Image (cartoon, rainbow, N blue to C red):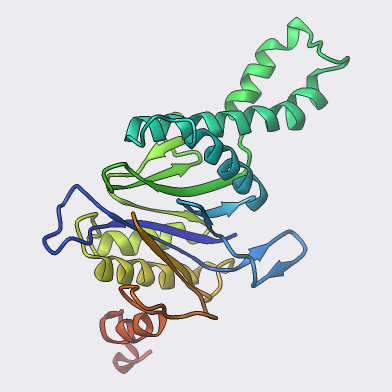
Length: 266
């Protein structure tokens, strides 16, 4: 399980409330199975100019990113529509392949290539309900320099598997997501805020997600703009040019974060 947070921001001196040109992705490093866990599961991905944070089945997320990279290379220009369509094609291709071998063949294909007509509705039902078990927040840049953010995964009350997140401009995935959402909402995060304020809000939300037992305290963070990106980790907590460092975020949390109420008594 995990926490992954994606936040859009503006780096302009006078931020435009609807034209974000920066993306912040943040994750922990906790990985758990039914029988084991590791504190070294790294969920941020930088694949050329594709940026992502993953939850659930990491290997499936990697496959989707690989196919998306191929689809992205085929589009004439990086408009929102073209990028959204390329990502939908990649997700659909991945879902079809895994549905075939995870469900269709073992359940319904008694002989190669043959499925009984009486099973047609069962196949349709299984396809509609099939979930590969991975979630992705994935970002690329529009040809004009605007940051685009998408969610790959199911959303309650919405159809489809690819969702544009230009509004509200932030999202969280994984077991710690409810706590992160609550804090981002409390801070009134929106895509017109500056990188430093947006990064700090994401950092606070990341700390709130620590309350989930399947999330650890390790922080890995990616900050990307159209022409540069930075990845901060425990081994590399600060990079020249990055709007903030991990030690600075820790210091800011001591100043601006929620305070304990012990002096009121237990």
